[in-house]
Image (cartoon, rainbow, N blue to C red; front, side):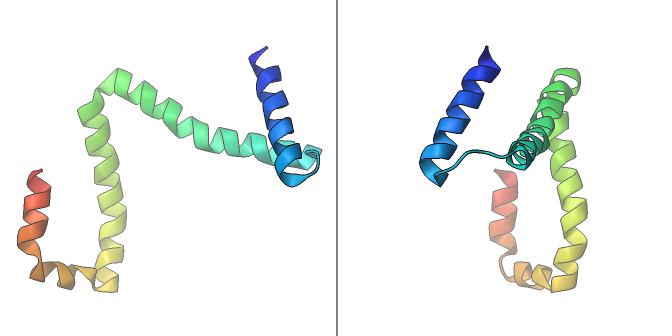
Length: 94
């Protein structure tokens, strides 16, 4: 029932905005985007339930920092932070 309502809404929006109907390829791409964008939120919900929100936030921020730190070093962004270390420290405390 819910899927029929969603499909009807999407089709009506698509028809009114794009002036056409969705092809099979369009539906497959739309479904793929739903899955790609929806699965991380499902995993976050499960992780928060199993581990707790503090652990999940720390893990996500830690992984992001580990990935972005070498990029920042390579681009020379860290040199600019030396001039603003007090501001960065204040934001880190918040």
